[in-house]
Length: 196
Length: 184
Length: 193
Image (cartoon, rainbow over all chains, first blue to last red; front, side):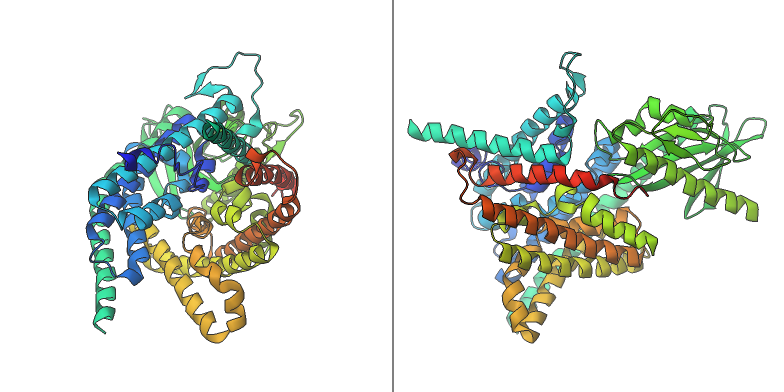
């Protein structure tokens, strides 16, 4: 159970370990993009961990990274093809950031640091925890940026009419700023927890 | 030496197994993906040229030119996909033009990843409707001030680059189409 | 020729990989602490990126397109990059120990640098011709180095600045990057095709 929970807060991949920044910043212009990206990462992370944990004994040490990357790339391609066939609109708005999951350091990092060293069950729990942790990070950032940037959540207008959207929130610059402040807030929460 | 064989063997077999799975996944979804693209284009044509009853495809500039005609076999115009670089990424525009290539029936943005709230406004009616009945005997001009001629469109405030990109992509493709039809 | 110059300028400044596509953020946050390491990383990335786009372009257009194997695109690209990094590392270790000492430690990190894979993927979606792809890869790498160097310079000056403790480290770096992205937006009027 601990393997699952640590990914959600204590070793949160985004706010604690600063992993997977590239998709995090790029696709969170809206909540729906954030959710789809999160689910795609959970899928790839889960199945890559599964395969890596199963074949870890037969893979020679020298080529393990190459083997892991090929496995990850395979699952990413499957996600990509699936989205193109079933959800073409989402596939279009996530664009190149779906294939870029291959080089998302969270996935290779978890395969290398956890799945290749632990039992199948623990690896899967770890993968789910990290994946869902990453997803809520995406969701939070997507919600903040969509709410302030366009005044909507999931396309539904929330803000009163007089609210003038802060376009900067949706621009790349806004992504950096929001994430910077979020991490500062997380640090603050952690500090006050330590004091107790 | 034995170690070497093991390394090469494992790597190769992993690649082969992965390629096998992918080709399977690919073959099961290929039809659906092509169908998606096709319906998207046909839907757009149906909106822009509602009288169309038959579409004939010919090769044009590495893509397809759709010749649209109504039920009396009268040529209504041509439809084609024009694509090019926008501000953030690729913009794909389905364009319908009249048979003499003098004016546009309209455009539909099939694909774009412009900045939400700014460049993404190119997919909204307010911008797209400017291309209906737009004169394209001369180049389309994208300007920031009020319009004075019938070959001009107004750029979206704060998204001049995306707006200009749409005009330029169309200009290039229309010129190519003109050249091809003239050489025939 | 004009197209090539346009691609160069727009990739270097306007559509900078780091500041507008968020590619290569991990090394951007990781190695931008010191100017020397930023320079080393930048050069290594530029070198591998130029090679990766050229070889990737050839393989994509001459093999994958011809034999209708497009679904292998991602697997092939990531293998090309991994192999390239390995070869470059072996090559410079053998022939130039000076170069190896300055670039060597950054090379293994490059395989998982999303900027390289990103550039390879963009080159395909944008239908670049061979020369355009090479220029795109080269200027992408230079743009990455430029931003990395600017960032390293700013961070060296900020090191002793008195800021609230919760902002130390990553938050401050991200906010600086945000401001930098705002500044780079000013370049967007530079080329109005």
